Every structure is written in structure tokens, then in C-alpha cells.
Image (cartoon, rainbow, N blue to C red; front, side, top):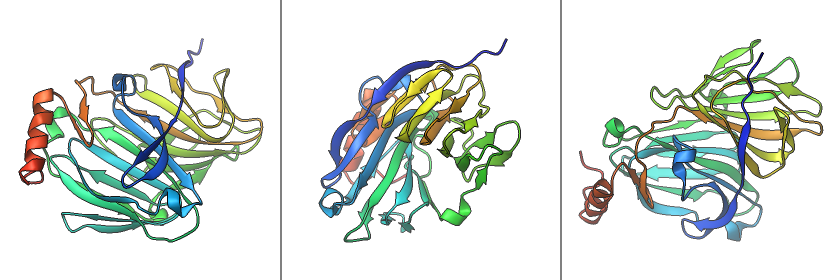
Length: 283
């Protein structure tokens, strides 16, 4: 008999403000991060009012994790202390590894129009938290896309998509956390059964429409956290757009203070001293 992953909890995002006043929805983040390990935060931003996003995210530091920004609509410019400059456009992805330290800015490169997308924080294992920082900007043409036999459009940002009929490696692979990040567009009446390894933590964020997952209904703007073993069957009567987020838990202590995520309070205090003394980004 086939074992199916169950929906163990559903979460509704909370209105928040970050950067220089950018309005967004914090889907996950804050207390109880071990439930989402290896993921630390998921923000959704979306507005056609420039007052909600125009101030952007001026220069700020990070240490100890990776950020993945996926743009649905709009244009955002990245600059960092390493000299990297990238323009994130509709359909593009920015993957930044803060590691021991990076100082960057993310500023809208438009005065009006819709700005819509997501930012996901992915933890780094303890052995890599003080490693070498890095940055990569992926144009929409560099991100694999496919359509299943049932008409589901899949954007394979990270990991490896496999539904038993089609397989596709994503634009990004990571050895320890093994993140799987897919943007799924399910037409009305379609179904999808992606294969994911047992032990991976799986979340589904429905950002449009309504989704049925192994007999559970997940409404728009809700995140479903699934159990760690079994098959997944999903479908939509009226159509849905969904982020599938999965990864291998690190099972390490998580201590966060703002833009720093380490394994102990002492390491956080060291990060604060390093930033204060201007040596956060030094080896």
C-alpha cells in the first residue's frame, strides 16, 4: 500500500515591513524555525503601488545562510561589497551565499508598475557558515522549464524534478541541504505527483488558486507543511500556482539575530562584533 505524506500544519503569512519600508508578507520566519529546517524564512512581496517597494533594501549585512530571490514581475538591482552587480528581471533568480559575510543592497529599478516575487532563506551547515561568500544571477533563459503530460508548467529553480515521466535538473544544486525549489502552474483539472526523497522536509505555498494535496485542501496564500515520508499527489479543480520547497534538514542548532544565523549565541555575538568593527566580510 502506498504511503502518502500528510499535511501536518498550515500557515498563513503575516504582514511585515523590511528594508527601508518595503511591505511584504512573511510566510515563515521567527519562532519555531526547526519545524522548517533547513529553511529559515519565506517572504512574498507583491504590489503595484510604488510606495510599497520603491525604498528597497539599502546596504545591509548577512552571515551564515543563503538567500534565493525569485522574481515573478518587476526589476531589482543587486550590488554587493564583492563588486557583483546583477539585474533581477521577471522570471529570473538571484542566489546569494552569505557564508562568513556579505554586504549587499537590493533596489527596485523601476518607478512604477508591479513588483512581485519571493525571497527564501536557506540555512548553511555549520562547516560552511564561515566559508567563502558567493553570488550568481540567473536570467530567465538559464532556468529550466518543462510541461508535464497533464499540462502542468514546471520551473525547476533548484534540485531535480521527477514525476516518473519527465526528469529535469534545476539551475542550482547544493550538496548538504539538497534544496528542491519548483514553481508549479497547475491548469484546472490537472494533477501532479512529484517524487521526493523520504526524509526531505516539504512545503507547498499556494500563491494563486486552491490546491488539493493527498486529500487535504490548501487555499490561496497558505503554506502547507507535509510529513517527511511518502508520496505526494496534488491537483487543482480551478487551477493553482504553487511553490514547492523541499530540503534535507541539517538538525543543527539555529540561533538567529536579524540578518545573522549561526549555531550558538556566542557566534551571533561574534558576528555583531565583526560587523561593528568592520571585519564581517574578512576571512
